[in-house]
Image (cartoon, rainbow, N blue to C red; front, top):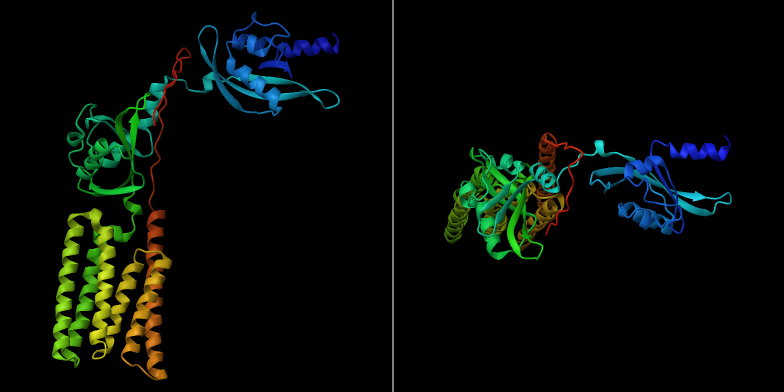
Length: 438
């Protein structure tokens, strides 16, 4: 047997399919394995256009035509096609450029193997159902009448639902213990306005507080008509910075408020302030105490208000501290310590820049009060500068400790990755296209 005959036999008996075309897309050779895999043993002739010869496998013809035009080979790709019998198969393929002895491209090769047994095939609806159930985030679908259409397993786990939710159940009944979540779902069915990167606070069935980061979407049919809405969410409780929790305000009240009160009381009884100034200071302290207690109560009753309430408290308390130090600082030296409280409270949750800015503003306000009171001399200003520097450094120190604790808590938290359970169907199952509307 001569070399050409030997090569011809070898190509025909390759374990993988091989299709060769010239640069015009004309079929030059198809080996036996390719004919058997594609079911085209008698439907082609040398010189046929690949679009015609592979009419039952249009995706392969498109790849050959594109490769002839671009002259760029690929490897380890996949495609799905069907045999004339209707059987769906998955092909793992690669392309190659054929060149003559001078290196000039003269054609394209398409090599492939049947990898169907390695790729799980299932009906598209079944696949989407499995995928939805195993999403790493919670997912809830309701129609425009407010009835639940689907709740995935992650949502059930995050919310602590006692069992699967039956389709068709009104969402306010199915999610009876999750009023903030129901409110978002029902309001979205009315407005059809989607949101992203939002937060809400609710409780699990066991009473544990839960903070969800969520987004909403409008579900439309192929004609673009809204038919329902969806909510995707994740449990972000452990990632929420300290001030976004109502407990933050309680911690501040527990330690900072008594200390501030003790400073003011000491200034009133041990200092030499005039009676009118004492009355003004007492009135301010009483008003500030009532404000702090009311804001703490509201934050406890409405955890989703905690972030805005905390910011309001910081501004209000800082302004009050400035006025108290201005009134009583001359009569009681330790009053300057009130300026430490606001930046240290900020340091518990804010980033380095915000903490630094707040501490510098507090230190600047303290120096401004000293100047307005006529502070003179290098010793006096030296002590005042040390006070101002202490405010900045203690705030940054507390911020560093708070950030370190948050990082350690986050790194020590293990997240259970969801598992994907896949049904392996028989080779006769086919995949049908599904149109999804955003």
